[in-house]
Amino acid sequence: MPRSMTAFARHTIDFSWGSLTCELRSVNHRFLETGFRLPETMREIEMPLREIARKKLTRGKVDCSVQVNFNSGDSSGDDAVSADLELAKRYIDLAEKVAAQLQNPAPISPLEILRWPGVLKDQQIDAEDLHKAAIKTFKETVEQLLESRHREGDKLGVMIEQRLTGIESQLVLVRGELPSILEHQRQRLHDKMADIKSQLDEDRLEQEMVIISNRADVDEELDRLEAHISEIRLALKSNDAIGRRLDFLMQELNREANTLGSKSIAGVTTQASVELKVLIEQMREQIQNIE
Image (cartoon, rainbow, N blue to C red; front, side, top):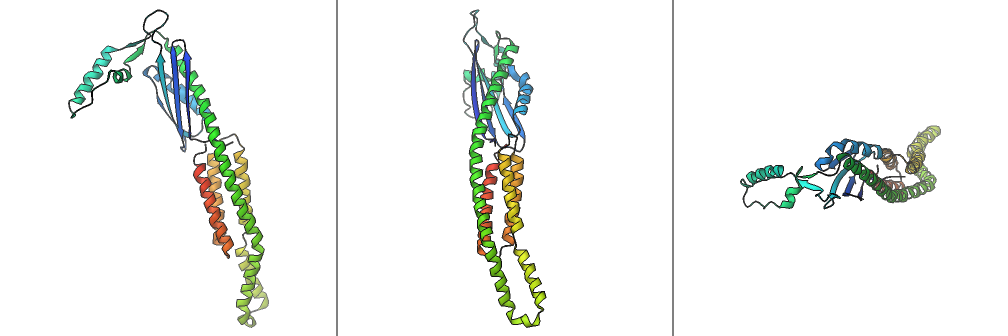
């Protein structure tokens, strides 16, 4: 089934020492690109998190943020979180130097200072336990993201199926009209050649009409369009990443629709070609979001 690259997931897990919240945002992208905003104490697990994402996701630009919320105290009665005041002072001194170069700088909030990298530090929780908790939270959030991608993909699949049905309707219309179109063209050629018929060999005239009829025959284009539709439906049932394959099939559909228009000798086939290209473009726009 198709999976959309546009999705969102947010997941929080509570632990004895506090909680971890992971937020994932995903949009379409040609390849898989992951970006992480992590607390300083978790920087060393960024690569393991990237590897988890790589195993679960194939395409898309994925932004991840992880927030740690510690309880106010632990069983020992000491604060679970402390601040590196020396580091904070260095940040403040640097910020004041920058502020001196500005006109009417905004005041620095203490809460903002606490958010600066490395100011808050955990003295009670083992780093390994914190990293394991973060990895667990990230894995569960990725699963939620996949579920969201599947839900959005199901909606895209319904839309694509509706357009495929519309294309099939146009193919049925053209096939039904094709015999009368060719017969009408044959009669027109006969009428135009009536005045000079005596000057042409009857066999030669018939050969010319066969050539013209063959040029106007679009049976092969209709067959290929139907074959591509079948391939698209097969792809939509696959559990693999199908975005690139669908994009290729859209190019092939558009190629056949253009050929149908170039061979057109009647309004019905010209209109069908235009309608096909509209339906194909509508699918192509949505397929850009499929993984």
